[in-house]
Image (cartoon, rainbow, N blue to C red):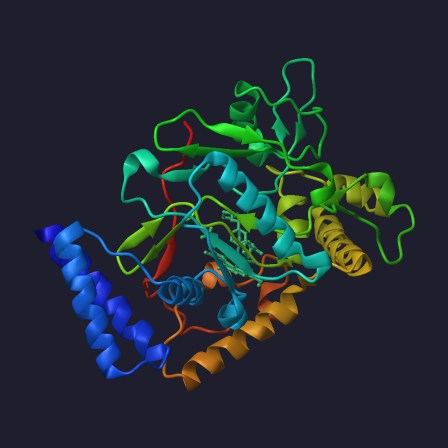
Length: 366
Ligand code: HEM
Ligand SMILES: N/C(=N/c1cccc(CO[C@@H]2CCNC2)c1)c1cccs1
């Protein structure tokens, strides 16, 4: 009985706000609430309409306290894939998501929502952290490591399932999907689907000697979307990149590709002392190379200053709508030159833990 009351309460809160924002009438709201109440009593759950699913997903983005890119929350394209039954159908939907999101370089924010987790034996899980990501190879005593250390564990799972990579720094991992307790199935990403971007620099002609590249679209695929008490454990979503994610973190972090020394050496910087600020100069040129290369390739990307300004516009927009903004300062400030952005001095940010929301969930493997 508790679950029925808890679910009914969560449904009521969501539907009330959702129908208000969609400017539906009071009678339509009351009818929907009565129908849901009956459905929950009869079946123990309830099914979202396409409209409720779409607006709920947009609200979950708008609510996320860690996201700097929320100005465009209203434009999220929502693909309803709750009817996908087999792993083959799921894999097909994921490949279509990547294509739709890339959109020839004019990246579109898209989310694909698969069925909710009512029936455990039919629950779909995507084992990838992101649909497109590079493999990681720890190497052994003799062999040097290769690829993205963040992918080492998942890459080992893929190899155990029979997938083979080239062992290089930029092998694109397969899609790994499971349904209920079944063994996961893996599907290679077709080579032509991902137009990777080789990194060049606007002034440093020898930059390509670093042999660096990155994929155009980040599609996070391991978070759970919760709307009005209903959980969707497979709901991959993408936006476009902010350049520092690639330049400062993915390629810059010591425990990731750790390329700052190589960039500094190419620049002929003095790495024998911190006071030359060689790491800072390497970070700057690496981030400039990322922006330059994406622009050259005609692929959407945002720099951290523009993204911060857009976040301030989002705060103003939300204030006009009479909504408080949920924010986590430590996540919203960019990893490069944070104090030069307007977010730095914002001491009003609070994490409001709003729902609908995106949640972390137990890894599908290990
Ligand atoms: C449109 C362009 C977008 C940009 C530039 C952007 C930027 C970012 C950045 C830089 C982060 C921090 C990531 C990190 O430090 O690892 C973030 C976090 C996040 N974003 Fe956005 N975002 C965008 C769109 C979206 C969309 C479309 C969604 C979902 C519908 C979304 C949901 C989230 C969530 C859930 C997090 C927190 C992830 C976590 O806790 O690990 N974002 N965003
Ligand atoms: N630009 C982006 N960046 C990210 C947004 C959310 C999560 C991530 C990756 O998160 C990892 C876990 C915490 N940091 C790295 C990256 C987007 C991905 C999907 C929509 S926008």
